Image 1 (cartoon, helix red, strand yellow):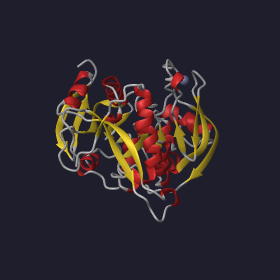
Image 2 (image 1 turned 180 degrees about the vertical axis):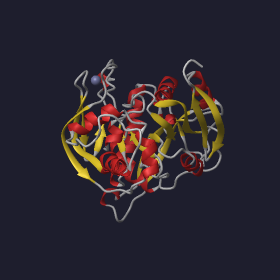
Image 3 (image 1 turned 90 degrees about the horizontal axis):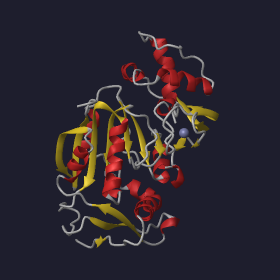
Image 4 (image 1 turned 45 degrees about the vertical axis):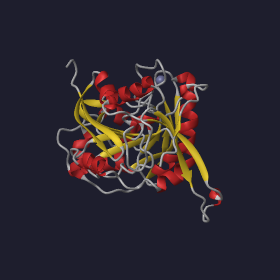
Length: 234
Length: 121
Ligand SMILES: [Zn+2]
């Protein structure tokens, strides 16, 4: 199946693009999105389970919070731009806040680990993707780990993409539901994605000068990197 | 929002970089929700906090049971109290004011909203 649309609406600013094609979409689809996102990805789960007991961390772009209770021996604060998704986290009694990943309200170097799963690909320019990555390495302690997942251009399983276009629109379909008065008819929402080429995420991380890459691989239609924040002056 | 989370939060209005921590708590409504006690987790987690900020913030919400200085040894009573203060005490409603620029962030239904307007970022 290849019914994806190239994103070429250059008339609107990057900020408005993210508002219309990311923020507003997640606000609208939050309940349905959450119903389909209950199972932790095994490698993310493993990363969280291997953390030292008493670790304090953050999940930036936590969605419905499916990673916030994976390991009872660590404390994870979830954050998301979508207040509707954070409402869902709160209803599950997960610790979470509403904020923008480009401007995190956390102290410098206060966390023992950070995860950001399927989030950075929603930023519409290289500058904004870099700024989001810089924020992750600002709030994590030196020597600590950051795990980042982003959608891969090369994915070949559930979806296929034209390799010539990295900036695309991917529809999210909320089917009609007899039991839900808000869902009398099927609704289609358009989400913006930047599809990462192999090595692209690694380069953005290395170019910050703040981290070394511990592991980099392909998993579940995504590229992922585990990076360690350097200690100062190294 | 628990005090652990509050202990990590700072003001992030553009240009507000000094004396922007901790955010001052006021007009708070507290709710206690019991949760499992895990002493090994607590022993390690306590050391990650800014203790002086924590005792200040605790005082702002009416908790005066924390010692001025973090003890070297954690006994059971101390850990039980910390468990109550850090993990079972939820700020359901309230205001968080930046000590530097006076920006106010709201906590509603237990959720801090840290979004800023375009002009503040
Ligand atoms: Zn401020």
